[in-house]
Length: 258
Image 1 (spheres, rainbow, N blue to C red):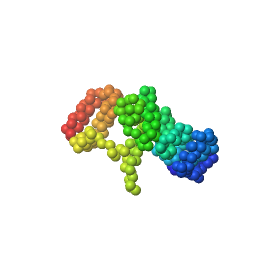
Image 2: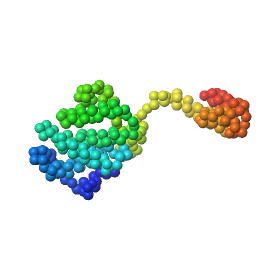
Image 3: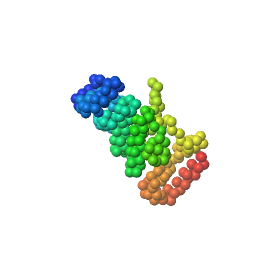
Image 4: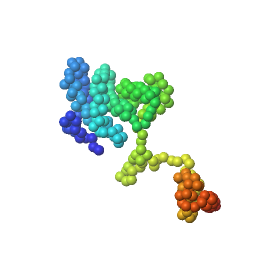
């Protein structure tokens, strides 16, 4: 889905002008010194394209694009309200993590996986600390720096932040070079899947294929459906003794094949 053209409040955001950094600073100064609502409005309109670029990181999670845009605008407005002109930081550098943080909070509160209250609270504090440190440092802080600010162990901070991350599909494409895409599942190995186990599975399939239809039916009902020998006997119309004999013969045949 393209986000270059989004209609909001009757406006096509693709037609909006993008403010230069100098223009942003001038408007921020005017707003803070005079309380100009007109300067504030210009700042919001001049950064809507920035909101669009940030929300693209959060697409594909079942959220409506318009809802994400609205949440992103809230983050933009918070950035405008809290920006400190005395800091030697570009507004866009400060604004992006504020918008992303607002989106993460929204997704966290509507997360499909239940997370404990204490873990959510720690994650919320860590997100706030990360946003503050990003503004102060002009870069993404390390996990240890965030942990120092919130007064928690680094591993606890990492766990808390990961707990509110959205689940990723195993079939999420992670690379494509004009050919077949590479999915996440392609990069996951199975430590139990060795050559010997793979060959054993093939041998088991061959052994099962060599059974008679009645033997296959009995094993399926007994071990796949979990039925008793008496239940199987009643269902296929033979005695329990016959079921027991056929079952043992089939198992013996499989063992012999393996």
